[in-house]
Structures are given as C-alpha cells and as structure tokens.
Length: 186
Ligand code: SF4
Image 1 (cartoon, helix red, strand yellow):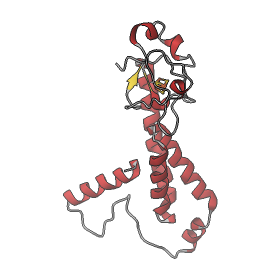
Image 2 (cartoon, protein in one colour; image 1 turned 60 degrees about the horizontal axis):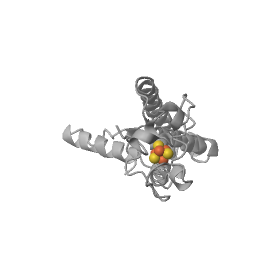
Image 3 (cartoon, helix red, strand yellow; image 1 turned 30 degrees about the vertical axis):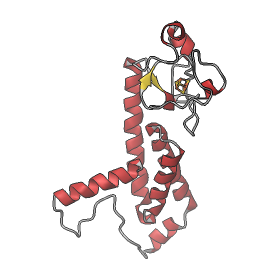
Image 4 (cartoon, protein in one colour; image 1 turned 135 degrees about the vertical axis):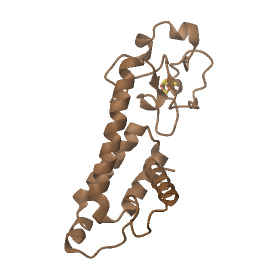
C-alpha cells in the first residue's frame, strides 16, 4: 500500500472513530466530479498533472519507495479529482519537506546510511556493488539487501544525490571490510 493510500486509510479510520458527520468529507477523499469551468480548465491542464506527478515523485524519493510503490502512489494521485490536485500538490510537498528535513537532521547526528538512499541500490532491490564484485566476503553477485531501509555502514556504499557527504563507504568507514564484512547493520 502506498504512502498516500495509507494516509487515506488512516484518515478514514480516524473519521469513523470520531463519527464525523457524513457530509463533512475527509480531506483525502474524492469530492466527486465537478462541472465548474475553472475545474474543467485544471482537468485539462497538463502542467498541473505534471506538477502533481513531480511532487508525488519527490515524496517517494524522500520515503525511499521502490518502483512498485511509486507506481501505486502515482495511480492514487491521478485518481484524485482534478479540482483537488492543487491542494494535493501542497500537501505532498509539505510531507516531502518534513521527511527531507528529518533526514538531514538525522544525517548530521548519525553517520550510518540506508541502502535505499545510496547510488548502488538498484530500483529492483539489487545491490550493484555486489553485482560488480566490489564487496568483500562471501557475497553473491545477486545479493539483494533484505532491509534496504535499515541504517548501516557498508564498504560498498556510494552516496546518492541527496547525500551531502560525498565520501565512498571505504573512505567513510575505513577498516570496516576487514573487521565486519559487507556491513555492520548497526
Ligand atoms: S549493501 Fe552496501 S553497497 Fe549494497 S546497496 Fe547496501 S549500502 Fe549499497
């Protein structure tokens, strides 16, 4: 289930629990079709759709979502009525900014990194450093990290585009390969 779908689900549950009056719709629910001229203009505005997709991708990037989750997120967004897209763009941007800020703060105090935020993590879940035979120890070339979201120190880590520390794993954590193998997972 995508982040957006989870939000919709949790909002629905909250709404049920609070026994909100049915006519006051959840802000993540559909408001149905609208025939207002302005909304029709938005519906046919490819720039608004492009902005929505870019914003959804930004949030997926911040969340470290894989290709499958990104596809579900984009599908969810496109299912929203066009008149709600401007609101949704603002909401997703806010969520992405919050997660990006949390990641920046965490990066300052924690030197560990996630596979999913590194340049050697393929969209299909494979480790490209292992595939190239760059990891020490008995590591299969078909190695796929079981927990790509877990913080770790890894000799094969290569910084992703959002990592301000541009050092490679072997430079960041010298001696790790001899002492710990592929990564310490700590
Ligand atoms: S195992 Fe190491 S090199 Fe491979 S994806 Fe994870 S952090 Fe990157």
